[in-house]
Image (tube, rainbow, N blue to C red; front, side, top):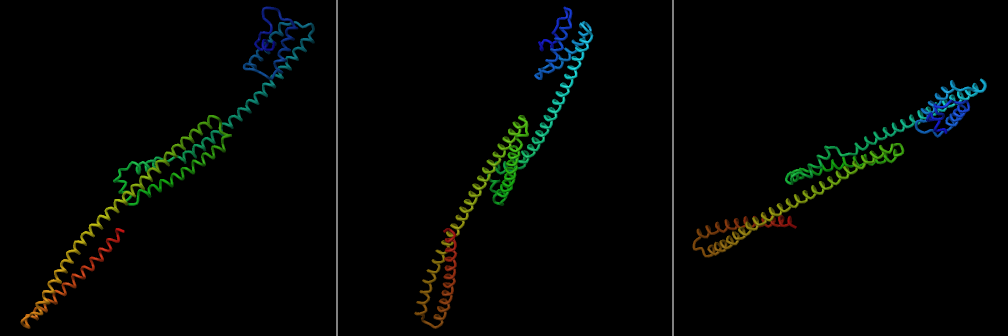
Length: 312
């Protein structure tokens, strides 16, 4: 009955309206006004019913004027009641709308702050460029960088930047966990997606940095090994030269000793004093030469010991 009345179909217009019908419509209106389970279109239908009842008053005859006045007063009371209820519902809607808008504002504010924190945790293009430079550089270029102790210093700078990014992202995750109750579902989902993407980018940057550092250390190790091999070759070449010179000097010393022995024999068998004096001069010269050769041999043996020690 109430739904029919609210749709304006309480009494067909084809038949005459009696005061009892109008009283039934007013009672139906009362039930509708007191029913707090209003559906979509409730108020539009209710005010349409009020208008319909008012219009029917012009057509209805009551047994007495007092009965008609009483019915009209009941209608006016229901209208006031409906208006009061409509106003309360409007205020409730406004209150809920305001609360919703405040919730949206808090969510947007938290979402904005979170985006700022995520941005602070994302490796900047310059950082990524630095990593790519070390990773993709030709080996010869990388060796030149390492030779000047620049490659590892650059990686250390990248490491510091990555640590700052990681700290910033940890703060962003912490802020997200603290504001999950404020964020609206859509904002919470997008924030989580943004954080996850930032985490993936940061993890990838860390992986590239670790790979770059491993490669830099490996290239430094290879460069060191190459320098060590080159140094060993130079030392071995020096040893070979010194041994050749030493052999030559020892040969010269052996010949000098033989020559000295011959001179001493000539001195003993000299047949004149003048020849003996000449032999003595030759002996003195040969002994001086031998001392020089022996001194040179001693130096070369010392140099050989030093070079051989370098290989140990």
